[in-house]
Length: 147
Image (tube, rainbow, N blue to C red):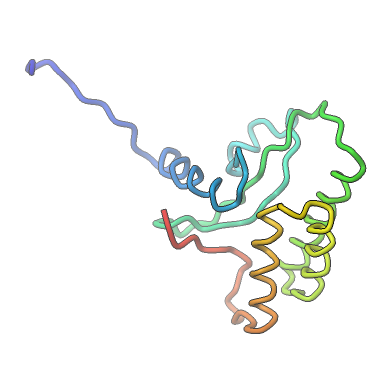
């Protein structure tokens, strides 16, 4: 090759997080997942569901992740609104360590959308925490174990 030839790559936290979030979409069964920083840039133009707060492999800092629902002018059905409200109530109870209440909300949400993977994920986690409560240092953040 030429002595003037250069090879460029993109490196940095943003690129690393993007790569990790790409694999997270598969785990949560969502088409598009946004990080908190991306969501904050366009929050006035979109409707989202706050999915979780995670720590991706290789990072110590947690990040909130969101599922893109649509543009703000999207008209949601009452059923969809109820589902989103139940999911958020479940997340709130989960973060407060009220895992039994979280299970109730998530189970009600699952009745509305039986194939929703984030709900199933949170049901499994809440059941596990009911049986084996987390220690006092638990901060509600889920640490991803794979890239």
